[in-house]
Length: 341
Image (cartoon, rainbow, N blue to C red; front, side, top):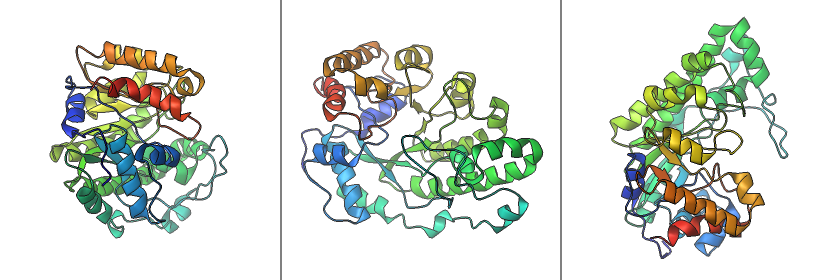
């Protein structure tokens, strides 16, 4: 483990997720990108292995001042077709299930068939005070859309609702097993359920359909995580106002991540929901790209000041740090927190 100037203390993030005030500013990021990982850690990936990659991730999160590192528990994923990707990804390509016959013929991945040993290896590699945050390769709705196609799913909900429900249940039950295996490892401190649910102005499906098909599986996963005395965080992009009570009171997530200025500016979200659920990140990615480091520092400082009295907030981007976010802009945001430690 490379030595870094910031000593991680996962208890600080736990205070935030418990809607309390941490003893110093806490940083939160879903994930970054290999260039940032190398710049933060001060070294490149040791070799081409997955173990070396995740060691780099741990080094980077630690060097960046985070109290955890985000990883996948294993390589478990659902098998879908190819999607054409450029600056956006189509939700109507790559589908593999269209009817009863293709559903019966689909080969479902079994979470238990995958290797989770990286959780133990990283547990031994991390410095004291650091934990892992485990995410998955998409959530209940994202993976169902990948298997069916978004437009096809909308038609299926009208024409073959029972088939649609069976597909949701197959996806949800496997994600539940994946997280069940992950949460039992001591190195795992928090579970991230990453599942995009909406457009800019509405959810992908009606709130009622979400409540019948998607939310019950998230509720089961959160209950599982809580039964191990660990917190569960939701990362979900899109419009959430109509389902905020479901997120907070029904599924009982400890924290919510992903905010966009044109949907839910983080300042407004904190003032509206910060006493009921931890608000994580929120400095809009577009703002990080287009703004000067000075303006970024000013907004980041404003969020720390807004949450100074009650806590329940960790500073970070509204989504993630992709390659097109200038490194100096990313560092302008995080430096505000690090300078106050």
